[in-house]
Length: 553
Image (cartoon, rainbow, N blue to C red; front, top):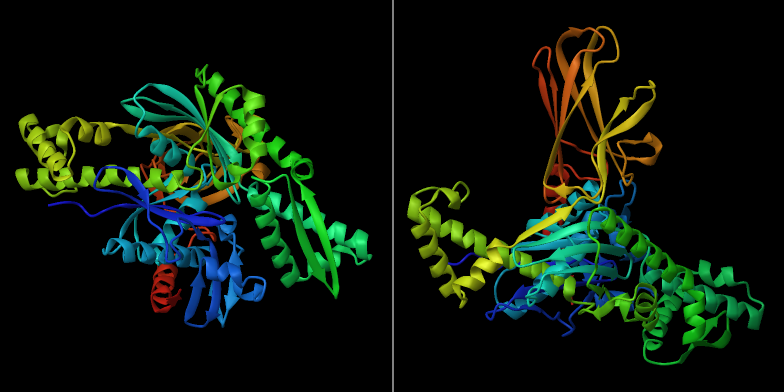
């Protein structure tokens, strides 16, 4: 008996990708219906019940800009983002679900099996709302999302498959819409994230938009038609964006490229040299270098005094300026590691590890009479465990050592945010008391004592917030709300009565908050619902609607 295949999905800002581990134990990307390894993350709402996703959708963005959605990943976790098509309202989760549904259906045509269990990746900086929104997108697409893992961690997993030596790697991940930088220690026993940072509004699209602005400016110089006129025309703007992306890719292998701009009967051919392109976009590149330096310094402060290699991940690292700049600035061995596919492959590796662990649990459950969810290998006779592991290894064409190396290697992540609650400090000023600090290892559990502020207080409002501040206290205005819970007291309490608050942050970044009044022993568990996260009823309605939508090729 084998556990089901667990697929890895890189749900990207500009392109998405799905992978699995093949019969030889190697992660491989599954091509889409166009026989390409990546699918543009673009959705075209063609009719009320028919959507087009991927390359065909990208090709009509300029024609139907009001019926297409691009770069929806940047809106994940945004409570205010919504779009309406044919009288139906769509949240970021809904649009992302259609992308996930498309890549899953394409994979099913190749494998001949239904894609169900998946691991989806997300930027390392994603907070609780963004991660939960990503998981909900998978649910709406009809998938069973086992984990949502950080993209740099996934890339390091893919890289670490064939690595036998202990090393510290820095993952520089510049995608279409996001930038992550993460320092990771890799050895035979574990993959440990040291620290992580980045910018969720920085990616290849910024380079594209800069080219568009340059083209519009040059058009104005030659025709006297204001550049703003081009940029405000949605159809022309989308055409220029497509031309800009093509020009950017061409400049990776050529010294110059010519783009023709047409507007209001005028036609201007604009030449862009690689040197000019590099100068126009230098500030974005410098921003990535600065963020990278910050993470190197953070790693040093945590006792990691060396970095052995720098891995370039993400499609935007194909730009020559990137590799040249990081080699010059950091003087490290730089590897351009499978930029477009590494993240999906790493998610598949993690999924394969999950599948093997589940298969071992299923077989141990059969041996012990327990359920697979309850069986604990550490309490089972070692001879039984060894026999079961040998059976699973043989079933997958693996050596016992290879299986043990896969399932026993721990993956230890850190949180990209700090988490705390509103409280009054010693100076009687309202601040956010941060229980879990950014770059703390997860899972994490922290308990802290507080006290009531008012005489006769009957409840405590546990307002939970997240921030990027690495400090015991943070300013309320610098934090984002996660959710709140009310801790009722069994009776009115005097001022200064003790309260205990515990934050449990799971490995997937989801937070649970527990509050306890130590006087009356009343307790509360925080189950957060913010505007950015759908309710269970909303998810089910969206899932039912997604099931009715036809996915056109």
